[in-house]
Image 1 (cartoon, protein in one colour):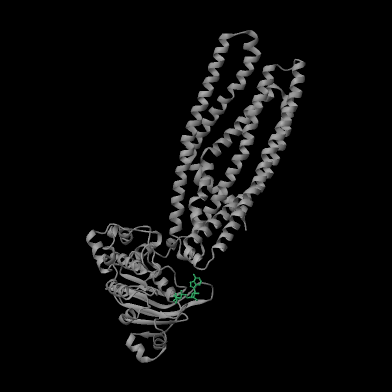
Image 2: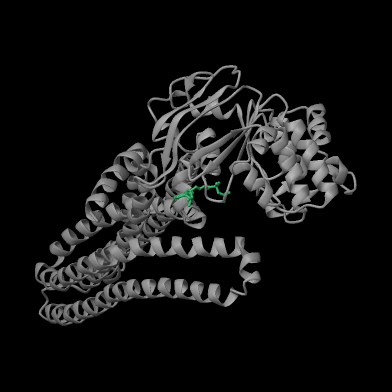
Length: 581
Ligand SMILES: Nc1ncnc2c1ncn2[C@@H]1O[C@H](COP(=O)(O)OP(=O)(O)OP(=O)(O)O)[C@@H](O)[C@H]1O
C-alpha cells in the first residue's frame, strides 16, 4: 500500500487544516518559548561574570545586579511556561474535542454497509484515541521543537565565540547522535502506525466480547476469548517493546556521546586553562551553554516521536473522513414535503457482492396505508427488500419510487423523517423507559406520550414499576423481558407516527398474554401507514393487504392469505408445513 504517499498527503493536510488556522496561537507560543529560552541563558552567562569579574574584584554592587538579573530571568521563565500551557495546551484540547465531534458525526452518517464490516470498538478508538495525537501538533510539541532549534543555534554561536576548538570537538559526537536518531525514527514510524491498528483491533474485539457475554458464556467460550485478548495484548506489548528499543537506543547513545564530549572538553579545557588560553568563567559558561545546546536536540527526538505518533493517528482519521457519507450522493436533491405514501418497486435488482444478485427484478406496488407482508424461507431476501425500502441500500438496477418520485433522488433526511423502523432485536438505550420512547421525538407532549404508551400497552407493565415510565433500564434493556422491550419499541414507533413503516416481527415465543398485547399494539401501529412487515405471526399475515412470497430473491407468489391458500402454491406449502412462517 502507498503508505508513504498517504503520510505525505496528511502532512500537508495537517498543516493546512490544523497548524495554519492556529498560526496566531503558535506564533504567540513560539515568542513565549524564545523569551523563555533566552531567559534561561542568563544563568550560564552570569556565572562567567561571577567567576571572572565579580569574585576576583570583590565587586558587591555588580553582584547585587547579577543576582537581580538571575532572579528576574527565573521569574520570566516561570511566567512564560505557565502562559505556554494556558495558550497551547488548552487550544490543543479544544481542537481534540472538535475533531472528536467531527469524526463521530462523519461516522454516524456513513452508509449502513460500512458498519457491516467495521468493528464498533475500532470505530470508538478512531473517535476517542486517534485524534489525540494532534495535541502534539498544536500543543507545546511543535512550538518547543522550533524553540529548541533556535536555542541550539544561539548556543552554538556562543560556544564558538568562547572556543572554536572545543566547539569543533563537541560537534562531532552531536552529529553522530543526529544520524543515529534520524535512523531510529525511520524505524519507529511504522511501529507507531501499526500500534494504532492493533490497539483498535484489540479494543474492537473486547467491546464485542463484553457486548456478547451471554453468547460467550452460553457456549462456554470464555477461555477462547481470554486467549484471543491475551494474544492481542501481547501483540501490543511486542509493538511497544520494539519501539522502546529504538527509543532507548536514542537515549543511551545520547548519554554515551555526551559523556565522551564532556570528557574531551575537560581535557581540552583543562589544558587551555593551564596555558591561560581560557578563563575559569569561560570554561564554566562553555559547559553550561553546551548543556543548553544539547538538551533541545535530545528533547527534539522525543518530540519527533510524538509528532510521528500524531501523524499516524491523523492518517487513520483521514481514512474515515474521506469515506463518502450517505448523503454525499449528488442525485439526492428532492426534498419530500407531505407524502401520500405509495411505494413502488419497478424491476429492482440488488447484489451485495458483484454479480451475485440477492434481489432479482422485483416489481410490486404498495399502496399508501396498505400492509405488505414479506414471507419466505431464511436467506430468501426479505430483510434486503426491507433495507431497500429504508434506503439503507440502493438498487443496482431498476427503481424504487415514493409517490412516483425516484427514491434515489430524494434527500435522505426528508425521506427518513417519514420512515419508522421496528426491528426484531430493537435497540434500547441506557436510560429510562420514557427517554427510550421519546427518542425519535424528544419534544412530544405528555398527552402524545401517554397515548403511545397506552396504544402499545406499555402501561400494563410500567404501572407495576415503582418509578413507572421513569424506570431505568440497563444497557440494551436487559432488565426487561423480550415482550416488554418489543412493546417499548412499538410505543416509540407509534409516537414517531411515520408514514412508512418497516417492521421485522420478532420470532421469539412470547406467552399468550404478551402475544395478545403485541398483536393489538401492532394493529394500532400499522393504522394508516404504508407498512412492510417481515412477518412471522399468522395474525399479521392474515391482515396484510398483499403477501409477497420471496424465494431466492424473486417474488414467486403474491396475493391475500385466503387467495394464496386456495391456490395451493408455495405459500400454502409454507403455511401447511411450518407452524410459523
Ligand atoms: N451484508 C451482507 N453482505 C453480503 N451478503 C449478505 C449481506 N446481508 C445479507 N446477505 C445475503 O443476502 C441473502 C438475503 O439475505 P436477507 O437477510 O435479505 O434474507 P432474509 O430473507 O431476510 O433472511 P432471514 O429470514 O433469515 O432474516 C442471503 O443469502 C444473505 O447471505
